[in-house]
Length: 596
Image 1: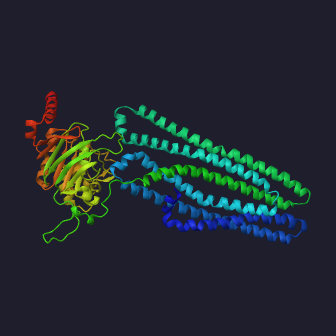
Image 2 (image 1 turned 135 degrees about the horizontal axis):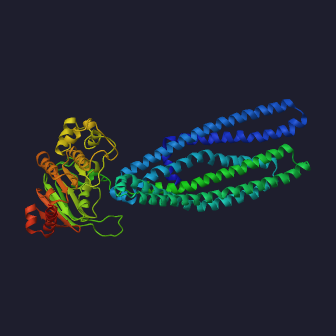
Image 3 (image 1 turned 180 degrees about the vertical axis):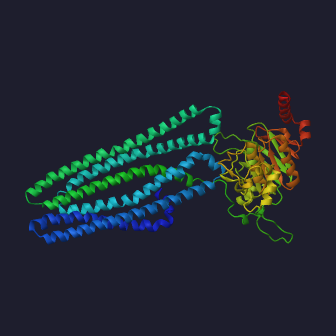
């Protein structure tokens, strides 16, 4: 784990290399002072040499100043290195998540990813900072103090041979238990974040159904679970303190007992005993500092595992290893010379060849799509209908490779989509997902996601085609109207028209609309469909719809049932001979008549 995470220190390695030098000098300066104090007590005071006492005192003051300066420098170096490490690690995590396919994202909840990017990284960052400051300082302090104490009195040093192993065994036992408890604690933080996120995203639904009390109870449960897990971990960590204090106080009493006897019989000076006790305290405090860092490491280990789960996640949808090595993706001109790889969609022809698909994370192993076969010619308007859960959304998600097929192949312009560079493939496909979003910023900034270089004229054209221009201009700031997070200050129908305009602004060769006019009235929807025929006549358009009226003018309609295509043709053809389509149409007509 350390080896994998160490590379994220990156450009801050120089600070990590400087830190041990500063720590060593700081330790030498600090541990030299008790030795000098013993000289004053055993040499200066008995001899009445005031000059010697002043001289040694000045040395001690200079060493104290040096220790302070070195300590401050070490704190600055460690803080810089730690913050830099955290920044690099967060950036790496965010970049990795951006490369995830939908399958990869399905492995982690969004709340868990947020926790890993924030809380888990902070745990590692703080451990890294404390590690540089204490993990280096404590061992150096321990070793140097042991050497100096042994030099003062080797016999009295045997007390440490008993105390140190007791502390080490206690710390090792506590750490072995702490790792599991901290791992559980991080999972509870995931659950709490998930509860908060769901509540804030769905706050309007919560209020409209008057479910505040239910949400409060749900939050209380996850909050209490986290509190209980944190208390269990904290209680285990707190047991280390009484054990350490018992050992330290016991060792101090033993040293004073045996050392006092040595002073009494003249085998040890009073100053030497004072210095020895100082060094023993430094040794035992160093072990305590190490135990604190080790407990932090226990929590950091749990966080590190969670972070590496994301960093080590294998992205299942990636660019081809080498586009130029696959001849299926090459254009062969009349001269017979290879022109190069096909990197862009040129016509928008879409073909499904015996496609079957199942979700990798579902665990059921059941196919959501079975043996899907069809060919859509460039510029055709295609409707897709079927009951809930029949695989409509899943099927269109395979075209831009949001998922990869399990069996068979999806082709665009007679080229398997797996042979395209992902960026080029998706640049040629406009998608309005069933669950879409607007981002904080202006309407203009949201539209420019479709084409960041679009002119005002192009923006207005796309918005007019999507029937969004009029309502945009009704706002005082027009296209510069600021949208709240998720577009909370506009209606559902207005959001959907902005989604469509954003996708149309790409001028894609393939446009996929996944139930994207459900909140739009029939008259407006009809105008949007007309714009497809007039302004996107060369674009292949897929429309997933619940209403037959949304697709009855389509060139071709696909009827899905239980993951299979059970009908294909025009509205008239399907009405004449497809039972499933007839049933859908009849149920909707009955709904219209009953409402009337």
